[in-house]
Image (cartoon, rainbow, N blue to C red; front, side, top):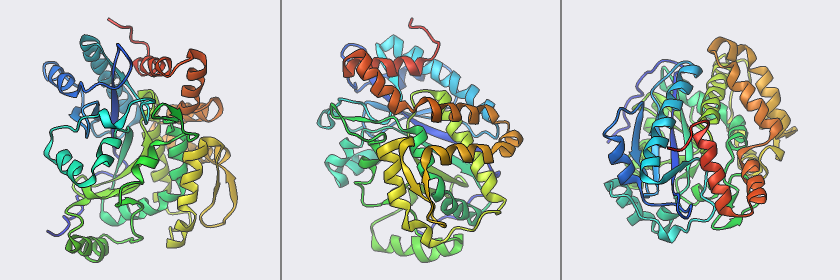
Length: 376
């Protein structure tokens, strides 16, 4: 069927989805507790929404739609506290992090939702290996042309979000050497990567989506696992490269950072995006995933070599007027501190050394997510 029209939404409104780990407090491995957690949450008021994910050791929380950072953060703190209280009753720890450091994919159970069963049948073991955890941020757009403009203009900043959210250094019991190893699982899927370079919604729907649908490979936008994709039913673009941070404060700050960048880009003072910008895209993405904020990226238009850490700090300075207008200065302060003090990936490696075990590292991640909330 034809791609639906792009549903207009208020410009720069935002919200996100956050995939979280369910951890047994007995052995600190993942545990297939999503059914029990979701059943318990039905019995109490829940701010936002919570749904199952592809395997039963995961859940996904969805925020409401917001226009201001502080409102989003307040909702997330309430969601966090509700989740933690439910986990305490079930002896289940809730944690962020893009990967669990020592779970084994073969032990995961696919959730009963029909779409997940279909994906398992199609992708085989990749579906269970997709027990990785990400943050997807949505930005509202008034029309499809603005959405596609932002989608391609944001390619320049994709390494920022990878490095700032990186929290998946360990995989299957070993330090991968990557700050964000999670992204390597995503790129295994055939419809991952980046969107085709099209800047007008009618052309995207007619010349790209319709042709892809006729191939029989895809049925809807859900079948694309792009780093950034349009969501016409919501009237948004969706950023999908972030690991799930270890704290909701970091998650909210990342959403506010994206909102401020989009406000800057919509002023259209920068050179417009061009297809040749993607010549450096994959390598810049790799630099951020492999080395985090110590990576070195190539500017897509000038080809200047930029230390990623310095580029993020320069962008934070550039965005100050936008953050003032949007009420998100605190979010940029939070991210600037992360640039200088270290990412969640660095925190996890430090905890591994300090605690002396992967289990100790997982426990530190659970406590980080809890914030100031004490166990019951």
